[in-house]
Length: 581
Image (cartoon, rainbow, N blue to C red):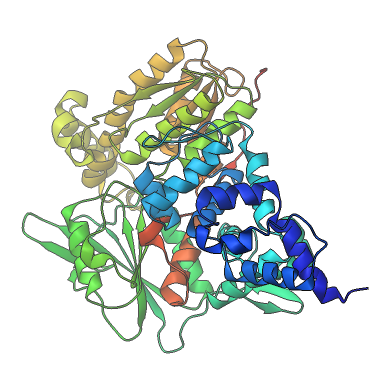
């Protein structure tokens, strides 16, 4: 019997002779005329001289996957993970090439190959779509390209496994400080070989995400540099120093403070504001200050809630500090200036892409809702438009044209103008204020102290704007109710969804028996009223941003493939019911 090591060339010969490999190597340039003398062997027989097997072995070792083949693997992996769902269109060629980290010609060869295998629909020069039944074919291609032997030697597949594990870590599947499953369990979970898994885990260890633990690994806790102990959090404020804290922003801030506390760090929060002249910063006390810079500061986290010229100015000042800066964009639609495109910056995105809406659409389809209303009071924003496109994309891929009807305010009045534009048409504000002050003087002193001491501020700037917005969005509710085929309302955020529930209760339309309601953000208010809502996994996002600030070894490719975004999840409560399909 031959020694075990001599079976390796024979095994390689068998693998290289599979129809898929021959097709892929011929289609993507894996074979060429210069190597024809070797490839003429064709590996058609396993019974030959040892010299021929050795030639095969060294041919394989010296011919790793080409860039086209790696791109094919990457696209197949994304299709299998439904990053590109069945029936959806892929991004345009330039965007897809940038996301894959390859040139446009390389991407073209990869997409043409997948079209030839009937995985993609389309033609050169046009956007490709993902065909039905493509998952099984993608898995076949991945299996063809990677055997137990090839896993160790071909660059590319281990990166896919590494990215899948990394995504699960960032989404909280494996908790910080706790051991991960055994290597045997991980091998089965990610459908790979032991050697590929070990290579993927070793690179994650190099990035500082995991550490050895007994016979497996554990997710590392965030640990601060002992020489510094502070992280600065920058967010929008008005000229009086009041932070612009919507429900979503409050959750980010709360999670950031919790992460910093767990890492024994101090979180300093400052605001940025601007007038007609220039930008200025405000401390927690509301007084003007300079952008903090100290040897005790580890880095900065910048929350972009609205794109203005002030954002570029803040980035310009941060770029001069030469410290890690994590930028969280919840608006979308703005380009990073050239001076902020360097290794010190990491870009992250939340609530902007259509991904969350796609998940909501799949969830509603699984519940049997074939006609839904999308209601948004902020449809001038890119995130609202992306949610509508994501919903329609999934319903169209399911063969339900017109399954999503939009009821939107495309040009809502600006928040800070509500009082000035609307107060005279609402109530007699001066008379209301006088009546309140008179009543306040008539009650005991200890009760007066419990009343709102800033009534003159809160009435025009909080109560009136809310009433005005409700008055403008109720016609959308009324129009949605008129469509008797609609069984579910998809509302742009939890605040508007709470008004929608009030409106449906007023109309005696039972939720969820008559109308199901689902929204986005999963704020504390959603929990309080039992609203089914999409959670953007803000805890994982803040953990990721803080890890970027504290860990320079972390792999950051945001500038090449777009901002990093974490998958969220739907939190089911009591406002969505199953319908008969």
